[in-house]
Length: 118
Length: 114
Image (cartoon, rainbow over all chains, first blue to last red):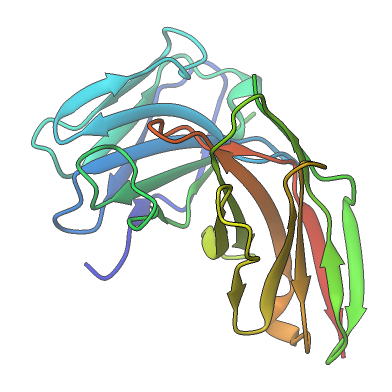
């Protein structure tokens, strides 16, 4: 596609439910990132994939958060047993660079999924 | 650890006027990258301008320019001839070379008034 596509755009979940957020990166982009953006804050790093390999998951806030990218393209961020503090916008970004980032290959962001946990 | 501070939560400017958004950061690194991202209501983060710390010349992209003061650790964004479409959240971000974790500030909400 022309850009990074995320779905759903909005998700409302009751506390305790599991959710799955999808990211379709730009075709051919090697690197894929998930960021969490709480209300009134800047995005914060969650995890990084290079192709299908999850090279860094240090930003995932708890073991309820799980991300995968099994074929090196589409990625899914799963949150189990959602809590109210999980309410945020979840942004996906991809980059052509195979080294995670290069100055001349900046990140392309999707429109995010706004998750509200009630 | 690096930090990025944006001290102006909200700003407004009249259409066609100039506005400057402030950003300061803290790092012990000598070389790094700095960015300004725009986030309109669509929520998509759009790269506005970027600067490499070892370059003394301030970056410019059309109506957008930066004032990079390395010693003061300041990286402000100037928007000239403001347009209604510039209305958005603006985030300053820091990146250490060889890494991929952006450090974002808390953002400045800019409103351009007709």
